[in-house]
Length: 421
Ligand SMILES: Cc1cc2nc3c(=O)[nH]c(=O)nc-3n(C[C@H](O)[C@H](O)[C@H](O)COP(=O)(O)OP(=O)(O)OC[C@H]3O[C@@H](n4cnc5c(N)ncnc54)[C@H](O)[C@@H]3O)c2cc1C
Image (cartoon, rainbow, N blue to C red; front, side, top):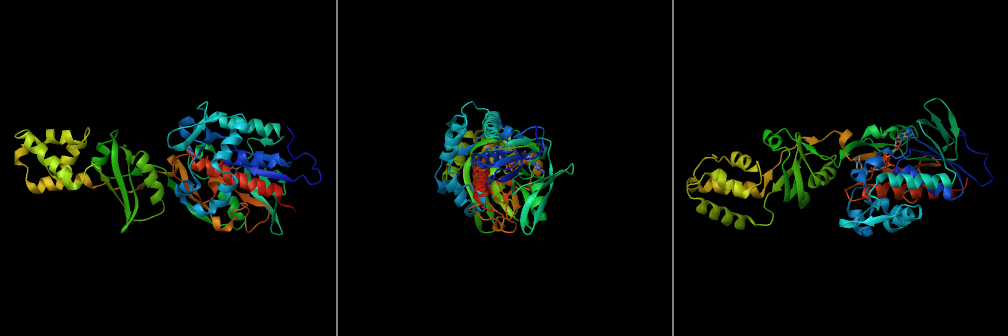
């Protein structure tokens, strides 16, 4: 395998893409399609390590929702993505994947997956296309620094000291979550060396930790049709009905993952759970009163088991200060009212997010105000571009994060290819 670039033709630019994840693969193919020499540098022994894990191995590549809905699912800096989404809307990504030999299918919530249900087929489609286009891929090639002269990028230097020249460099090194996949934040250091600022990375789309014994005691219990509400002072950040689960260290599940993204980087957020969102407080009160009347001298715990799933019944008894063996007919009005109030707004005290190592996405990253959103080019260094999770943009689950990686990379590569010296 040749180690540098082939002799450049006139007009043929030498473009280096750092990182062979979703963004890097798209950037490499897009730049090569426009006739340029592309060198894709990946530190791992193979491409697309994180891509392989996505969507539980099935890879939720994008979401066919409207642009408005897409942007509503972006937790940080949605406006920065207008141009990129316009350049590569979800439907166009699907068409590209089909053209590259990866048919897709749409599932619930407009989520798109490869028809084969295999994430590896997405990587395979891109690598095959890259190969056809003459993209040169170097594995075990970790970029250590950028070379710059007179405000323009001139190449990169690898960990082994090898310097490789280029007229454009696209940084696609990802964030810092799941570092075992190669995303260890190298891109932040590279961009900082170019004068950029980085918004401190935080875990997002992750479980939340709790110190409460009753929460940990419920580990394994999953709840459906509950409403999780997150408030920050007087502001409601989130209030949705769905599923959540208790873990050995706190809470997780779809509602909690979304909540974690919305609270990433914010202090003093409160979480409350409505265990019966289908009933108003009055309706619930009537239901509880009826259950108690029907139970007569039966123990309160049996009434509670009719109201809540699994071990939540004894937990609710303790939280409401109700003695489990108390005959139902002896329950005081005050205790009954407390039980109803807790059922409608159970505080879930959390201490913070799970470690970033196990977070699905990194919130934070390269400050987007320092990049041109129409080209992803650095406003500080000519010929330097950034795309994907290395940027301070992140979204909720549903295929949005991969689409952001693909769309920003497509935009960057198109611009890098078009930019005249
Ligand atoms: C478990 C899990 C499941 C997910 N599921 C989904 C899903 O179904 N749908 C969705 O939309 N999103 C999903 N995501 C998020 C999605 O994976 C990321 O948004 C996406 O991978 C970001 O792509 P990227 O190319 O920017 O970064 P990455 O995929 O992280 O790729 C960065 C690449 O750069 C390489 N690299 C880093 N530093 C260097 C260096 N110095 N030199 C050379 N190479 C370097 C890394 O080795 C890596 O291969 C999931 C994430 C996780 C962790």
